[in-house]
Image (cartoon, rainbow, N blue to C red; front, side, top):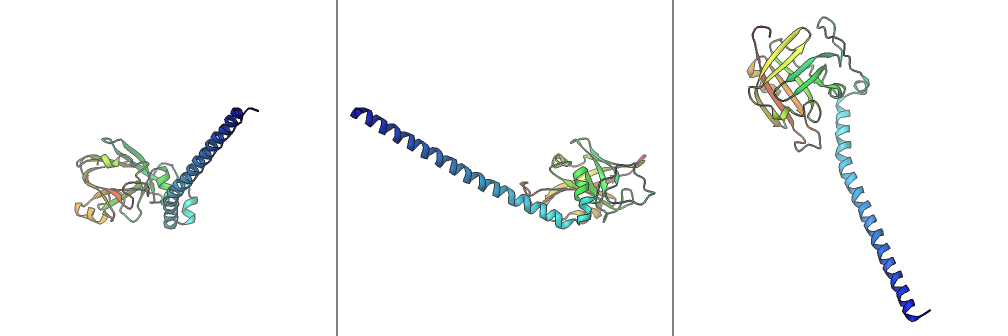
Amino acid sequence: MKKEDKKEKKYKKGVFRNYLIYIIGFVSVAVVVMICAIGAVNKPATDFVHRLEKEFSIEIRDIQVNNNNFSKDKKLELCDKIGNITVESIGVNCDIYYGANRVSYRNGAGFDTDSQFFGEGEVSVIKGFEETVFSNLKRIEEDDIITVKSGDNSYTYSVVTAEYSSTDLTKSAAEYGESLVICSICSDFSEHSGESFYVIAQRIKGEGN
């Protein structure tokens, strides 16, 4: 074999070896970055799920929603459908289920059983996830109209205030008398992590309402 051929062969081996090292290095770095990224995303997701699981008993997780027609005459059970809420100006339209829990949130919005039922003269509270049924709620404005239908009754509310808060603003709604509070729960992935979006609306009374 000629001297020039040997040099060329040696040169090609060197180039191939360097190219292989470069590929292995690139793949190794990419794998490390992917593992770190997955770990960074997985932790808040896991923490969020665990936090929710602590709030609700195992029995709650197994309950299924009941979509039968609502009747206030019968005893309400958790996750019974009790009505529907709409805000036409921003495209919000979802069913309301009895109980503020994950099953209700998964299917629509949940009615807080510690609050007063619609039309009973005090504060009614509805909760749901910002990422699902209330994704447009942050666009709501003062004086926008909210309609809640439950059974044969319809209740109309006018928005008084809307804001993100890390503290529960439900008590502040009492000054408006018969009112509605919508609490839109932000996930740990939201820019408003640790906060909720609260809408407070006062009932408009009149014919058919």
